[in-house]
Length: 156
Image (cartoon, rainbow, N blue to C red; front, top):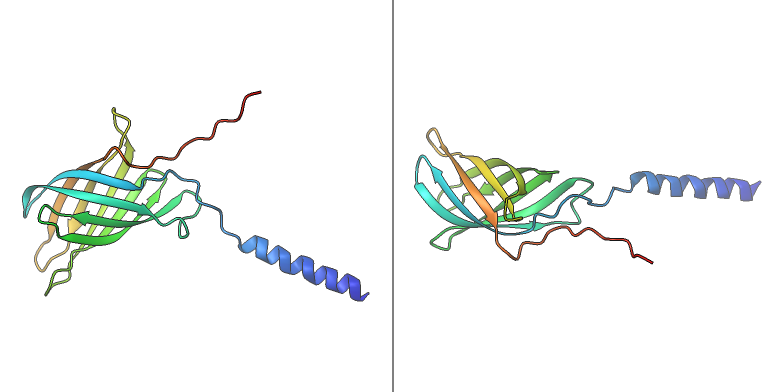
C-alpha cells in the first residue's frame, strides 16, 4: 500500500513538472546589426545602427525576446527591448538623456529582402512634452546577421 501511494505521489509530482515546462524557442533568430535610414517630423532625415540580440532564455515558442540598442551618428546609444511574434516585431526604447526621460515605441514586419537579408520598416512614436514625434526607418541587416539554419537529414 505504501509503495502504491509513494508511486502515485512521484507520478503526480513529475506530471506537474512536465505541465509547467515551457516550449523552447522555435522562431527565426533576427539577431544582428542593422543599418537604418529614417525620417521623422522633428529631426528630419537620419541614419542609425540598430542591434537586436536574442534573449533565448526568455523566448518561448514563436515569441522571441530581444535586447535592442540603437546607436546614433554621434555615438549616443539608446537601449530597449523588442518582442517578435513570428515576423511581427514591437520595439520600445528609453530615450533617456541627462535631464529627461522619453520613450519610443514602434512596430514592424520583418522579412528577407531581395538580397536575402532581413529588413524591416519601423513605424514609431516618441513621447515628449508636446504632441510627440512620429517617424519611420527602413533597416537592413548587415552581412554578419545570424539567421536560423535548417538542419538537413543525412543521406545514406
